Length: 109
Image 1 (cartoon, rainbow, N blue to C red):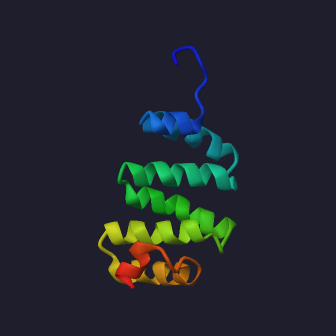
Image 2: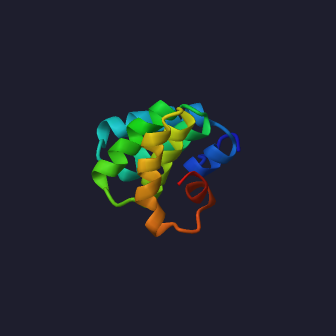
């Protein structure tokens, strides 16, 4: 794909996470309320196991859209990976009524 513009999804699939973070870092500075940019950055940080950084963007997502179940569940996952199980359970419990078939939540709660 040399010489072509790649989408964020294509960069993600190719494992080009630093490029995504560089690009979205510049964009989020200009658009700090962009739900989409924070969502992308949270997903990338989770993928590369930088859970604290992911939580920064998940916090922002939940400020923008408090009822976002994906961000709520992802926050629980980050906290679980960081060994903060009681905090993780809080977020999983918030998502549970809406995602009652999700195996991870059922396993932990």
